[in-house]
Image (tube, one colour):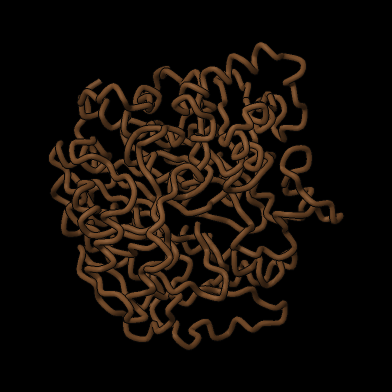
Length: 524
């Protein structure tokens, strides 16, 4: 089916479990603009991202899954603090990042390059799109005509940066003075929310992003464009710039939960601003809008009140093999896991399941939803299909364009993904092989203790369609299915299951370049 080339906007939330959206079942507060987007398009109920942010972004841009060996590495966050401290120049920071780890080859087809080659203006506004620290050269190399925002992931944990970058040019933000970008701290129950503009917190990053997004839309309304907006929201630590009265008045939420809910609402407001601007400019009917997230839900940095990622509400420690996070078990008032187990960074379904919504007027019929199994890197295959571009053989995605058009689309037979615990692979029929790596035994096996290698991996088999909480381990009952999925996953991991962990993909600058903080430095 032939289509006029649409503009494409991809709004990419950070750590947004799908259950935080009222169109996916949230009851404690509403997300009216995202709900409206879903009612005007198609909502995916079986969409996968990655276990956490950096591999999700790399996977999205490269069009491949995150368990491949030798495709990329993750540089460490935090190096841009040295510019604020005055201990390093911009050029020194760039040089270190550019010469650390593996980067995509110059001729690698990346998502922005795909659009750029087709005559689109490409723009990225918000959180960095690669690794934990990036450079202007990397962003231009990836195919962005224009980029604005953060270049360091750790700085994204605050919403009041002392500086940002506008197309590679650093600019200071008056009134924002904190070296940690106004990073939030856990609030007490009686903290006042009257004055949200504390010392060193003057200009809110999402406001800056909104202004740049609107400006870009106005400047490019007559040209095809791809706008990628990776937001920081609602990644913690919790700090809401504004408290909304309907959320404040909810008696079921404590102060911290109110703050967190307002962070989600603020992202919803951005979605509304974008949709309104498209209507105002008269290009809404010519624009495909995608809303998604990088990974599943977390309570790690968010400090959402009574919820815990390490203990049940009865004080039982989670071991992530037989006892794991669920909203009911761990006192999550938001019920953000939507009947799934696990959190961000894990290979439970709750760690990798994401919201995914597509609006495309004139093509996607309104108010649809689907159980079609898809994954974030399918976007590259879909856009290539739309633009009639042949992809290289090394891409892993499958186009969901036929589904948008109302036709049957091919699904993945299996989807592999990495996590800090170990890799997993899930099949179209719902069978999922989950692996947990015992790193002590794995390392021992590398140094001659080969008898320990088999013991280093724990295998669990679940049917995630029938057993959404992943309670009934079927591995003993169906050893042949374990072996079949393990064989596929072993191949996808390049012959080493440990490649299905981010631990195998980190690259370090060396401690001599850093003045490490005494307080906790967040890595993801």
